[in-house]
Image (tube, rainbow, N blue to C red):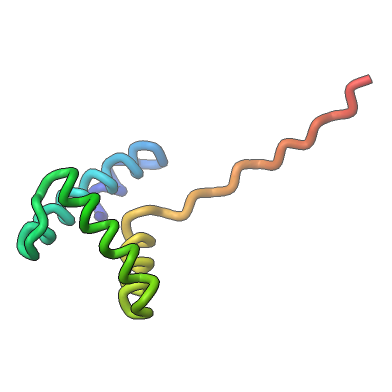
Length: 87
């Protein structure tokens, strides 16, 4: 993750791209060990299962949130658009 941040520099788009690709590759390696296919369909099936279990299990919900914050950085809020009085 450190190397990804270094390579992206200050470019938030690059950072998200690299981190999401890295996260997907890690996820595919892990989920295939637990009976899911290691392709896009397996990732979607796994993600759907996690979403269902998050509603029932507080620990799963907490761990899912922790992983999300590690791989998806907090995005700065864009400035509010305040229209000027045009007359």
